[in-house]
Image (cartoon, helix red, strand yellow):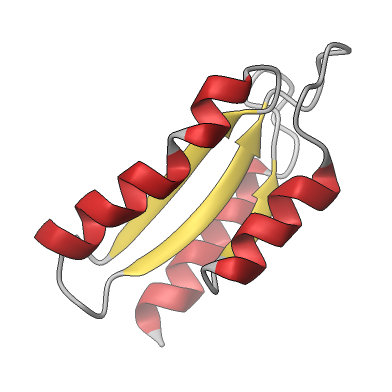
Length: 90
């Protein structure tokens, strides 16, 4: 893989908590230069449990690019995939 999307459901704390474990798995099994992007999904839902600030802080901690999306509404999906493509090409 040249690019990996780490997607969590911003309405489910457990999915956010799993990001650190997923990053450990990537470090153990993926190439060193793989591009990783952190993605908060379901931003269209009202019962958000993970704030933008929490997502940004985790992304900063692991030096990841951060996006917030709604797959249902298509919010920021194009920006996400264009951004990943640019990271991979660079």
